[in-house]
Image (cartoon, rainbow, N blue to C red; front, side, top):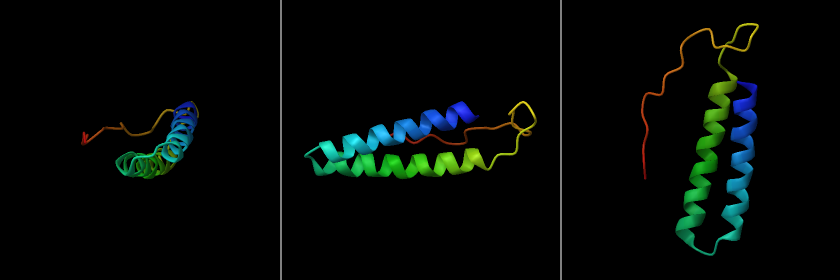
Length: 68
């Protein structure tokens, strides 16, 4: 889980860099929404209770996926 959090946070910062390097409003909006979503994902993953091997105590299921 810790490795996943690290990768999500690194991806978030890569998106932030792209957010500021684009000249199109639609791209700014896309990267802004994506970084906000990543913050939510990181918080939810961090709050998941795990055992001593960092395995979640309850199965984690993706309920919905939205493609824009």
